[in-house]
Image 1 (cartoon, rainbow, N blue to C red):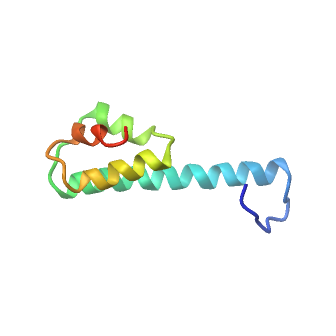
Image 2 (image 1 turned 60 degrees about the horizontal axis):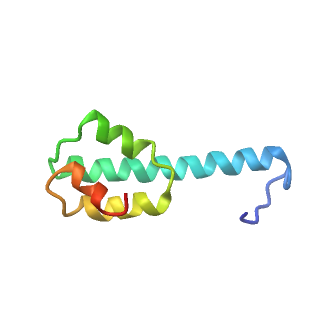
Length: 82
């Protein structure tokens, strides 16, 4: 767990805050994958959108983001780390 200077350090409040921060980073990464696909004019089906937005692994999202730059279809990103 990262060291923080949160006023309630070591408490349930801090744990909740850190979890929310991590969820925010996951959401931003997932949105980045979708933005790259969208900016490249690649259609994203509702199923692909859902899979990207519900991913809970930062490494996987990183692989997908890298793949989003070169794939021809949105589904192809799942061949890369997913």
